Amino acid sequence: MIETNNKSNILIVDDEPANIDMLGEVLMPEYKIRVVVNGPEAIEIALSSNPPDLILLDIMMPGMDGYEVCKRLKADMRTSKIPVIFITAKSEEEDEKNGFQLGVVDYITKPFRLSVVQARVRTHLTLKKYQDHMEAIVREQTEDIRAANNQLRIEIDERKKTQTALEQTNQSLEDSLSRLQETRDHLIQSEKMAALGGLVAGVAHEINTPVGIGITASSFLSLETRKYAERISQNELSMDEIKKYISIASEATAIIESNLKRAGDLIQSFKQVGVDQSSKDRRFFRCKEYLDMVLLSLRPRLKNGRHEVVVDCPELLEINSYPGAFSQIITNFVMNSLIHGFAEESKKTIHISVSQQGEQLLFRYKDNGKGMSQECVEKVFEPFFTTKRNKGGTGLGLHIVYNLVTQILKGAIQCTSHPDEGAEFIITAPISP
Ligand SMILES: Nc1ncnc2c1ncn2[C@@H]1O[C@H](COP(=O)(O)OP(=O)(O)OP(=O)(O)O)[C@@H](O)[C@H]1O
Ligand SMILES: [Mg+2]
Image (cartoon, rainbow, N blue to C red; front, top):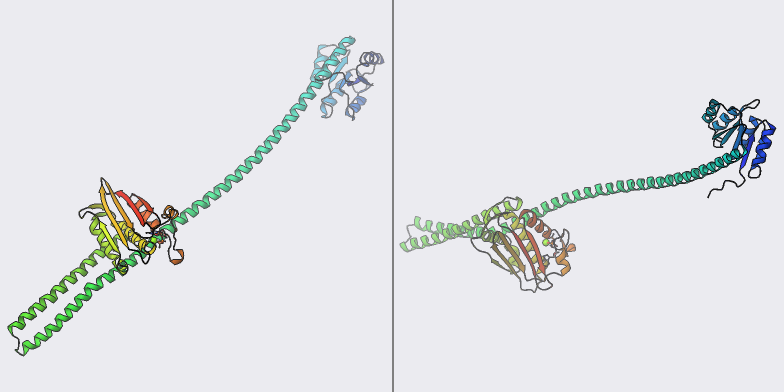
C-alpha cells in the first residue's frame, strides 16, 4: 500500500506573500512545507540532498519566471522527475498549453479554491509514489533479467566450449578409427603373407618325396642301362637278360612317371591354393576336393603329431565362392588346434563336416583338444585376444577368420567350447555369396 501523506515535502515558489500564506495554511497540517520567493532558490533546493516531493510554482516572478524554472528543472536528470504544478493568474488556454508542454503535471489558475489545490496536490503525490514504486519494480525486474541473461550467456559459452571439445574428441576418435582400420588392413595383409609363407614350406616338403623317389628310380635305371649296354657291346646278352632289363626299365619308368605326375599334381594344386590365398577371386569349386588339397598342404604340421583329420563332405558338393577364404579359415583353425588345443598326451582328432542346407552351406570344424573357458569363447573373435601372447600369439587368427566369414563369404560364425571338451566352430554362409 502506498501512503500519500507521510509528511511529503512540498516546495512553494511564489513572490506574493498573500498566496504563500494561503497555500501554507491549507497544506501545513498534512505536509512539510518549504517556501522560496524566486526561481534560482527553487532550483537550488531541488538540487539539494533533500529535494521536495512536489513543487507548487508561480509563473509571474521577477527575474527568472516560472517557465524558465520549470524548463531548467526538466532539463536536469537530477530534478526532472519532481512533479511541478503551476499556480498562476495566467488563465489563457495558450498559457496552460505552454505549461503542459514544458512538462508540468498540473495547472491551477488564480484565484484558486484551496480544496482544489489540496485535492490536486494529494493526487499528484499519490501518482508520483505509484510512479516511483513502478520504476523500482521495473528496475528490479530489469536487474533480474540482466542477471538471467548473463547466466544464459555463460551457459551458452559453456555449451559452446563443450561442443568444441566434443567436436575435437570426435575428430580424434575418427582419426584413431581410420588409423586402426589401416593397421587392421595391414595386419590382415601380413597374416596372409605369413600363411602363404607357411604354405610354401609345406609345398616344398610335399614335393620332396615324389621328386626324391623319381631321382632314385632314374639313377637306378641309368645304372642298369649302362650295365646292360656293356653286355650288349660284348655280345653276351641272353634273351632272358633282355627280358629282365625290359622289366626293370618298365618298372623304373612307371615309378618315375607316377612320381613326376604326383609332383606335377601337387604343384598344380598348390599353385591354386597360393593364388586363392592372395586374391579374393570367386569361382566354382568342389568343396571336398579343395578341402583335401588344403589339408594336404598342412600335412607336414599334422603328421608330426600323428593327428587324425576326419572329413565328412559330399564328393560332388560344388559351390561358387571364394576358395582363398576357405583355405585361410581352415589353416587358421588347424593351426589353433595344434597350438592351443592339443596337449602332448591327448588323442588328437579334428572333425570337419560340410553340408548343404537349401541355399546355405554348413561348415563345422571340431577338435577334441583342451577347449576353452566361457570367458575365452566370448572374446575369441576379438582382435588381439590371445592366451599365448608371450609365446608368439598375436590374437588375430580368429579375428581374420571372422572378417573373412562375415565380409567375404557373407555368412556367420559361432564358437562353442567348454574346458576339456574341445572347440567347435560353425560357419553358415550362402552357397553363392
Ligand atoms: N582350437 C582351440 N582350442 C583351444 N583354444 C583355442 C582354440 N582356438 C583358439 N583358441 C583360443 O583363442 C585365442 C585366440 O585365437 P586366435 O587364433 O585369434 O589367436 P592366437 O592363435 O592366440 O594368435 P595368432 O593366431 O594371431 O597367432 C587363442 O589364444 C586361444 O586361447
Ligand atoms: Mg591363431
